Image 1 (cartoon, rainbow, N blue to C red):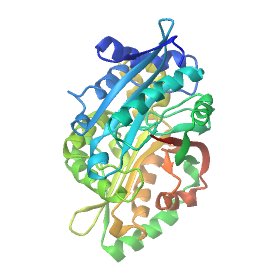
Image 2: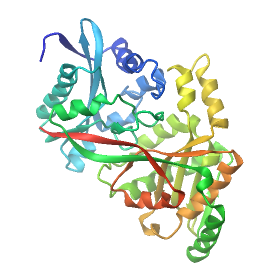
Image 3: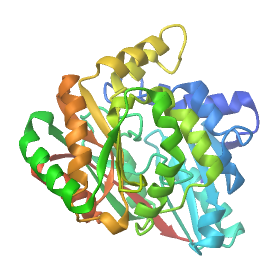
Image 4: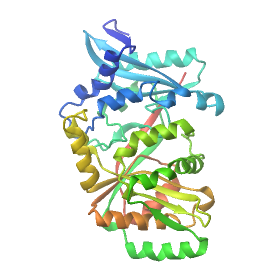
Length: 375
């Protein structure tokens, strides 16, 4: 390692702000990068504010060269994953760097050292604290705008991983389709059959306050329906409250739908969000004075929607209950003039989710993966 690069551990608010702000210079004038809200990103790294730190630890590092920040990385250990699930994984995320192999190597070497100190067997990233965080290095689709729930990166990132001896671990695809590809008549027909056969019904919301009583139960179902996936770490009760609080302002209640069984229990859910990408670009990392207004406009008027989470109780998978979710979402989208449906990263091996979309002629416009190295 060249002695020109200095690693600085983030231990003050000033350094944390530098950590969160670094991508703003790295992606300056890039039309596809979507910035976070700086204040919110800082809060999510604060153990006093983010309950994920009750079962995870993280250390944050900046790489500096000639006094200028040239890279950053978060080294994360999720103790539920390591101790309860027995997966000896050293996680890393929020990994950004200039196109200089010395910089990326220096940052990854630090994570490797922390992994060895903690007797972990491999490192994998970029990933966040849990499944609901951003994931993966973009490997295809650099000329498509990012979303608030994905990381964007320069094409050279994957070359650095390869040169440093990392191997692709989990593969993800991102697809999109035109809303007009959805045939509402077929959805109505299927929904009627499913409702009769299984005595289930759809539930939608006009107001956020009507939705709130169902959120905890929805997260329980999320834990249940995703448990079999290779990347899964369950969400704790305290995290549910935090996530509810964090995302509620971004939620348009019309885009959240449930399917209930005859006893009123949730057996399927879909959370769709208006796309905030352009609004976040205009906000430039700040809610005030105008960022909040841009987000509000997007919430009401965005013609693009992002499918955030869809979950079905394992007992009802492959029984067509998705048709009810799609039928109800179709009604909301039609009312709001939606044009594009964009899907968040989905594991290539998640066949159940791929089956949901296959009728809508989806186009894969991005690919991403995590990288792994044994320690």
